[in-house]
Length: 448
Ligand code: IFM
Image: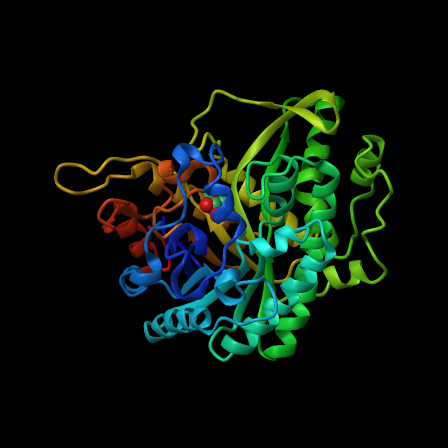
């Protein structure tokens, strides 16, 4: 049976600056927290860094040609803040803006609509040295940066995503410490989470002030949280995990404020020792400023059982097929998420801004890459997306993660999410089988 997507459906791929650009010292780019973190021994696997990555900074024309061959009508990429404001605020580095102008010109020439993410984790180090995301000033600096970029590029870029994955910006980076800047301070992470959302709200205003026809959204990452059993304890644990990972971010964005059950749990655990004085009058209204779309990043679920305390659940590892990242393949979670955003949060416009999978399929002697498992993963998730659309969820586009194999943060180059294989020795791009499959999906606007 053919599954047709609505007419005008947006078909894209997604990438981010630090993961593909390389050229970290080119044309006046400043240093970011990921430059510093990846160059700190022990922080990334085998000490990999984004210094060279896919050399996209110099090879963007080749990469846009691949996008055109795929038939994409949209491309999501991120701008590197330290290329544009090397010190985080103040001085503008024109060559940094010029690079994105060249990229966007090339996209538009191929009929590909640019979706620009402003923050995909490469905070200028100067701002981190001044306190980073736990400091309110970082949110204000972000708004300044957003205004500069929208004023400079808003004539051509009409779609903006403020922050990629606020859970990662705050929790993964400040509580768990796996991502730059690598802190392990839960109270500071909660403050950082607020400033990340505040930065989004301030940036929505700054972008709209600079570019009146801009469409703006944010891209939280969601993980389905499923109780390991029907026991009240496991259900409560799954609810708390959902609060920690999902509701803490989406509730304030849609006007519900911070979830009171989570505030109570964090308070009981001593993680909000002074309450929440960092939430200043007016902040929640700013955060809940209506946006033009919600961008959704979705990959997997966690199966959750009661643990030593409500904030430390046991994550149960079922014996099920997993991706190279160890993530369970759970397309039903995408369907449920889209329906929940539609029914509970009443989100009027939804985009799937990331969905994809890492597998390490070899290059065969004939130079091909037979990544059937990626095709299957993408197919299952597109089916889930289609089912949600049929059930009324206003899903308007899908951005596959990722166009190219790239620097997968702490995993370095040991994970490969691309529909295009990158040989990091030669920078050769090799189309995987999934590339042809996705091209066919786009060409017929659906799944055969
Ligand atoms: O590569 C990342 C991306 O930067 C953010 N979302 C998840 C992807 C896969 O881990």
